[in-house]
Amino acid sequence: MKKEQVLWFVFYKDQILMEQQADGYHIPTGQEPPVKVPVGSTIHVIGDLQGIPCKTYALHTPISGEESPCRRMVGLRASYDELPFEEYYKAGKAFEILNWDLTNRYCPTCGVPLKLISEIGKKCPQCRQEFYPHISPAIIVRIQKGDSILMVHARNFRGTFYGLVAGFLEAGETLEECVHREVMEETGLRIKNLKYFGSQPWPYPSGVMIGFTADYESGEIKLQDEELSAGAFFTKDNLPEIPKKLSLARKLIDDWLEEKA
Image: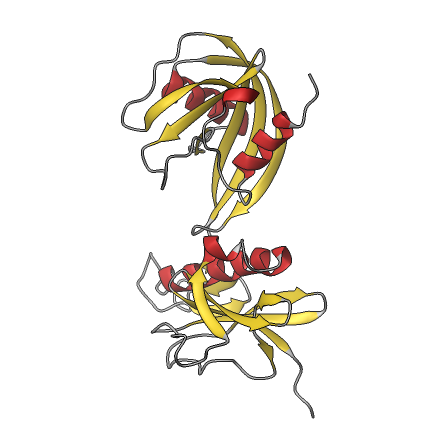
């Protein structure tokens, strides 16, 4: 019986293997793994893409261009600029599954090695607890004041760009409460007219971003110094450097930029 074609999402840490084809870079496709599966590395099934089964596994060492000139490894974030969006999107899920597999090897209650029971499930054979990928929700909000929006530079940003106020959901909190709290903690501002905008998986390594829009209500900007290094309201004609296209922050900003006055 002939084996089926598979899309192979192969990672070394946060770098994914890409293969150059006539129309650009793609995820390698074939009946067999493009690189030998290392001893101890599990092949995970992660659904399908346009009818083609998708699988993922991790390498212990990276693949160099010298070994295969048509293949190269690139960071998952950077792959957004080179892979078709559907392949990048599926690569995010693959990375999250691999990270979950790596960080959930033993039962946290009794220390027994966990057993894989489904594509996204593990079970302890001793105490029978089941474990699934943990996703960390975070909010992000675009705050508008007249013809301007609030933009901030977080100290952990890799670059000089400005983004939007964001933060992680805390236990016992609604998403709306989280937005109000984060805005107050980070900027000292009060907001109103909070509205849901959209969401986005954020596999770096296991998050989901939930986006909102809001209007400025009151207060003066007082930045949370340990989190933010700069922040101000900007109009469309004096924007600082903004996030790349892959982020929900950029979608929120572009949505505002496309609004007609």
